[in-house]
Image 1 (tube, rainbow over the protein chains, first blue to last red):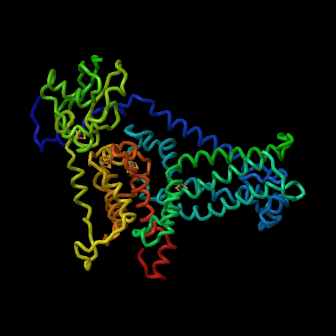
Image 2: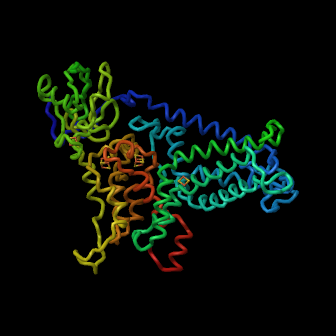
Length: 267
Length: 250
Ligand code: SF4
Ligand code: SF4
Ligand code: FES
Ligand code: FES
């Protein structure tokens, strides 16, 4: 073997190992499952967006809440009876609002990780080479727009509260009297809790409550909130998936009930 | 008890080299570094490997074991099947000096590029008063043993040599976050984190966190909080407006 010195060209080289990865475990499994999970969610969301079965008894389908269109939202589905989009708006009501929760999840730090890895393969898994020749990350358009995430967070808090309100309303019967309880009420409550845990575990939320401060000791209340949010934040990925599943389940449940497919006594 | 294990080890000087096969004895309780030392003692006296503490604390023995960045001294042989062939290579992001030993000076260069701790001019050493809660966050980052495995695994430079000039890497972006969160640091680090040290290149895919032997939550606790601080400074019109109206910094 020839001797090399610090100046020789090969000495400036990395090991010339010409395989993409030497990993021997099933590194492709996690991105494959993530890909499939996100794909199924998108398909469901696309269908729900155009579906008009919004209301079943006291239950409002989460994908269409708040329901803002006079022509397509039945009286009981409207938020405080309010429908700012008059009869001129004849498209499905979901189209009016889904950009907000959609944008929230699209710019979420966890979802970014998940789709950068599973859809864009950048990288597909750790120590597995990505297929792209050039890489600029989030330094320029369009990905620099991910920095708008906190604005989606503000809207998501409102939507989270509306879903909570919907869950509370689900404890009324068809005549508007309190005291009803059905499987649907339970599903909507669980969904609201998971959505709130996801929303308040947001990294932007963590930053706004106290992460931006350098003197926690001068803001004891904000620091206390920060520690609570940090706990949710540590499980952000789990809440992202749990809330995604619960939204689909709750939404599908209400729509199937509205269509008469689900009609057992405790529904 | 003991058994013969199959190893494939990268041998060569500089970038050129090849994977060489070895069969070597393994005893109970041993780690990969022990086996490499046995190879040195019995079959390959010129096999180069960097190590020091054998306790996972000096950060010298970073290598890639079956394709994953690991500390040789902390990777137990019992985590592998006896029949498995174990492949050991040097870290793939840095130039190789010989065999498993890399030239990691890239990291020292990046460390020097970050302005050091900058206290306010009117506070003298000995006058610093800090509450535990104020420094707790940065104490997590001080656990770093500078093994450089996070720098090695980060795809921004691992897969794109050309980004090395513009990207400090997770270890040093974390250093910037540590200083930016420090109650007594007055240097403005937000603008430069993005424009000079390449925080925007990180796409928060968390491989640095996955490989850190000190289990530092690099992405969640340093990089993302730092990205949010950069948004405050550079991209959020409301924060900008607020700082103009209330004339406040933090
Ligand atoms: S999270 Fe960012 S810094 Fe860490 S490995 Fe991924 S891209 Fe690199
Ligand atoms: S942050 Fe962790 S992985 Fe990176 S150099 Fe320090 S100890 Fe190693
Ligand atoms: S980081 Fe996931 S919702 Fe904000
Ligand atoms: S020899 Fe010190 S960390 Fe492995």
